[in-house]
Structures are given as structure tokens and as C-alpha cells.
Length: 199
Image (cartoon, rainbow, N blue to C red; front, side):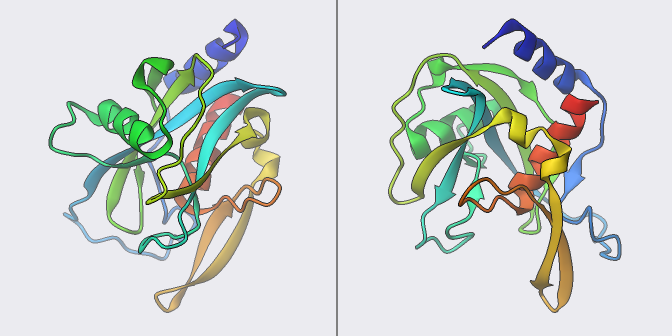
């Protein structure tokens, strides 16, 4: 990773900011006090591509019960054997896309994100330091692809859309790229990163 990009990302990690939520754009939603969120983590993996720095994303398999076909970071819920949430993100990336843990230089974590499905997701920012031949785990991942970091850290690329969810309208961020419709928690986490990078 280029030194200037690494410095930019480390500054973004050091910036103060609140946790985020799938409910950020829906101020009328009242979340119950004392709710218990399940810990999870995702890897925001940045690698050098043909056109510069890019972020690795996945398209979830269409047969999955939860979020079929959606765009997501590699990641999942914390297992009892994971020493911490960084370990969760690295393990999930290895299992889902064949990313070796030694290939990732972990830079830090972004603020946690609460999902509508009851998870508290910690985004782990990491530089992928060696070329990797990704292998999607067919039970979970249909495709692995990358999007330019410059696109995902440009707030002008984000839009707000809405859809009906559990009988009410739910607003959410999207950040489309080509044929990929990036939305929901993934887009909200990226939006938070964009705000930190752009200061």
C-alpha cells in the first residue's frame, strides 16, 4: 500500500465518530432499551489493483436464507474460539473467500454498526499486502469482486433510497458500482469510512 494512502486510512481510523446503525436514516424508530446484540465482524480489505487501491467485496449466494444475493464484506458472527473480533473478521475472510490471514496487515477497527437483524458488527480495516487468488466458498459466496476505494470514499457517490420493511418505510444508503447494488449495512459502513477519509 502506498505510504500516503496508508497515512490517510490511519488518520481515518484515528478520527472520532459515533457508532452507526441501520436505523440512522429512520429517526422515528425507537429501539428497545437493554437489547442484546450479537457480536460480529467484517473485513474491509484494501488491496492494490490495476487502477489503484480497491476494496474487496462479495456477492452472497442466492440460496442463502438471510440476505441472498446481497453485496457484503467478508465476515460473520463471532465464534467462541475467536480470540477477538479481529480474529473473527480474518477467519471469516479465510473461510468465505480464501484470503490467507498472513496476507492481511490489520490497520485497526472502525466504530461498530448495529444491524436490523440484531448484530453489532465491527468493521476491521486491513491492507491486503500480497496478491491473492480468491476462492469463493460456494455455500456462502457467489462472487468476489473489488471496487475502487476512491469511489467508495466519495460521499457524492452515495444516495438514499427507501423500501417497505415490516410495514413501514425504511431509508438506507446505497453506493452503486456497475452492476452491483451496494446497500444496507455495507453501504452505511462505507459511508462512515468516506466521511472519515474526507474529514
